[in-house]
Every structure is written in structure tokens, then in C-alpha cells.
Image (tube, rainbow, N blue to C red):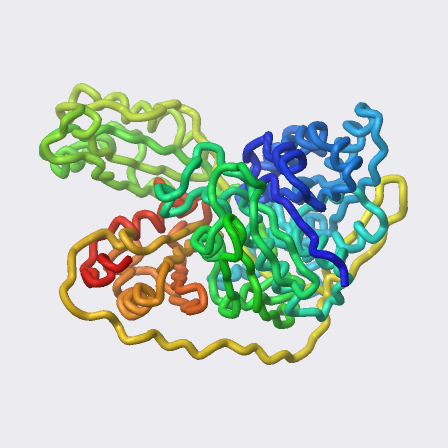
Length: 588
């Protein structure tokens, strides 16, 4: 039986802390260094980069980090696995190779591709793949409008690259957890039907994929943690059975606790069956245990065969947009908003109906009896969208400027009034049969190997404890923010958003489970009143997860919400005042 493998993360998104790779390599013992660069929005960003500079659709910051740590990794036998290849994993691998040559080093570098379906869309449509929208069923229509179309590959291309002696493995669009699951499966020799072990590694990968979010970053109870100004990145030590210990290097900031791990487990998930290309991991079987300071053990994870399809992330240019903000200051906010709206459209050369989309909101950030000028200000916010770039350009910026001296008292613009329209992208999730998307593994200077993306089929029995909530706490109540007792984490899933909320003891969980229904979520989050909402229970984690369909409209790049990625949705929920039993509030 192989020893546990310690896999450390150094990036949760494109733009994360540049020094993190060096911190993880030099800060303590690790076996593998990983990094996640590819949020759904990142693929659109890389497509724009690639359009300007052919072959440049990858994360340049990863190449910089490799220059910082490559020598130490080779000296210490640390493998590197990253999805920083984005749209151009081959060019990313070549860039890393050039850095190695400059440093006088000779690592074995491999890349994994096959995820890019853009050159194959006509072929796949002819084969019968309809690319219908995964959430709405909308037909795909004209495929020439798409900028990117990438299937989420699994971990076994990475396994093959490591088996062929790669020191550095660079992938395109694989699942976020694959860069952790791959090294674990290679090290422990797992077969493709070792569902529970693979599921455990997927869960560990999900926990550490977003970097410092597992070690105190973006944590609801951050005020309880010392040294939060420079949070350490996490690692997962994965055992032969797929169980893991989540930790961070000693002496670094932040905290690894059941709370921080639970919070990250709830991030950007849907049902308790977490679907993937290698295994469907059952989040309702996860058991957490605090085994030491900054050490949390994850065990008991069960897995089942994945679906026969792969998810595809597709992006298109939706058109052009302009966002304008006009201050509404002091008294009579609603009347001022009405006047600004009327005056703006009279000044505009176009009517409201001339645009593809117009969204207007009054953002009430003002306070009663304000002690500063800023506290007196609300915003009239308008988002204009259209396929005609000129229509949302200078003329509409001018309309906002022209009414400055002729509408409301206290008028001023907030933010940019630039005349330039901004292109925006529309995200589209779809499915493709796994059998049609093989993975290709290339070792620089060697041959290409083909790895099948089809997982074996089989039947497994998942044992989920029947855990009805204990009796709800009764008695006197007090009106306090929900977050007084409960933590939350939220995020984007294409045009949908999720918000997970968790309790920290059994009594609070019993109350939460009985109290927080879909109807109550609609009341507490009025933006969701007309949306389809799914509610999922995760009793072992003392958690509930809600999926709000369509909250983010056509995806992050197209969303007109101020919080386009729903990162603050959980904290908004925590700030809502509800009646909570005082016995829970006074419990130790």
C-alpha cells in the first residue's frame, strides 16, 4: 500500500496570488503542486486573448510561477499538474519548456488536450450531438457564433502523462478536481471502477481547488480566525482508500477547520450527487473530523459510475453592453429615480424598445440621517445591451451627461461614463457523449497517446444514513441576523447560482432544517421570488444547499446583477433578520 500523497494547491483562479507556488514548494513538504486557473469566465477571457495573439490562450502567470519553482520541484521530486493550458495547452507546455531551457533544466513536460470541440462542432452535429442548452433545452442554433466549446475531461489523461514520466503536466479544460484526482489515482494505482477512492479524491480536489477558500478565505466566521491578512494555501494528503486530510503549512495565516472545509464543500454545487467524468461523488456521504489543529480528515465518501456524457462549456459573444450609474442623493429617492429615468430616455436618440435588453435598478445604498455625503447616495443603474456596438456607445453616455443640470438636485455620475461599448459573452452548458471525446496525451519530444474518456459502467449501492432532523427547538425567540449562528458560501454555475448554509452544532442544524424552506428563501431573497429553486439536504455536513435557476441570467459575463458571480449571495442571506430561539443564541 502506497503512502498518502500530499497534493498542494497554488491557484484558485487566473489572477490568484503569484507567490503561492513558491510558498507551497518552500513552506513545507509536498509531493505534488497543482493549480486551478479555469473558471467558466476565464475561457472567454482566454478566447479574447487568443484572438489577438494566436497561441496565447493560456495562463501566463503559471509560466511565471514555473520559473520561480521549477528547479526546487525537480530537486525535491515534486510533480506539477495544472489546467493553466486553457485553450492552448501545447503552447503553454512549449512556453514552460523555454523557461526550463533558460534555467538550464530538463524536466519531462506533457500536455493533455482533446477538450477543444470548436474544430469538431460540424462533425459532432452531423453525428447527432444536438448541444441543447443543459438547463433550458434551447436548441443550439447557428454554431458559427461560438468562440469556445470545451468538454470537461476527467483525470485519466493526467494519470497517463504521469505514468509516462512527466514532471510537469499541463491540461486544457478538465474538471477542477481532476488535477488532484489524477495524481492520486496514478500514485495509488486506482482502477477506473474504484468508485469510492476516486470519489474521495474528487471531494478533496473540490475542497482545495479554490485555494485559500479552504483555509479561511471568504469564510463567514473570519472574525474568529487570527492572521487573516495572508492566508496560507491548502493541501490534501490523500490515502490509498481515497480518504484525505486537509491542512496547510504550519505558521501560515488562516485556519483549516470543519467550518472552513464545510464552507468550501458547499461552493458551486447542485445536488448531493456531484457529477463528474470519472465518478459521481456523493456529498451526502462525506464525514468530517477535526483530527488536529489545522487538520481535517475527510472519510466515508462513496462514489457511483458517472453519466455517459461530458459537460461542455460553450461561450459566444452576446453583443455589446453599457452600464451607467447616476447618483440619487438625500431625500425623495424614488421620485428622483423616476425623473432621471424619464429625462434619460428623452435625451436618448433611441427608445427603450430599440435595444435588445434594458435593465434598470434603483440601488438603495443610502442611509437615514446620513453622517457622510456617501451615506446619502443611492444609485440609478442602467444596463443597455445590443448587437449594434454603436447603439450602446457614445450616444447613450452623452444622454446621461446631458441631463446633469436639468434633472434632480444632487445629481452626479458614479464610475465611468466612457463612450466605449463593452463586448459581453453568453455562457451555454451542453452535453456530449464521452465516447466521442478522447483525451490526447503528448510528452514533448515524444509520441501522442490516446486515452478513452468512457468510464466503465456498473451498479453500486450507496448507503446514506436516514437522518431526519431532530425535534425543532421551541421557546422564546429573538430577531437577529441569520448569520449570527449560520455560515454560508455561494457562487455561480453558469446562469444559475447556489447558496449553501451550514450550522455548527446539532441543535442549530435541527432548527435550520425545519425553518429554511424554499418559501422562506424566496421571502429572504426577493430577487429569487419568481425563480425555480432546488433545495438539497446534507445532514452529515449539517447543511442545506439551494440552487437558484436563472439568477445570473445568461451567465457571469452577461449578468446585470451588481454581484454577477453570486459571491455575496450567501452573506446577503446571512444578513437577513429572522426570529431564532434564544436558547440557541445562548448555547455555549
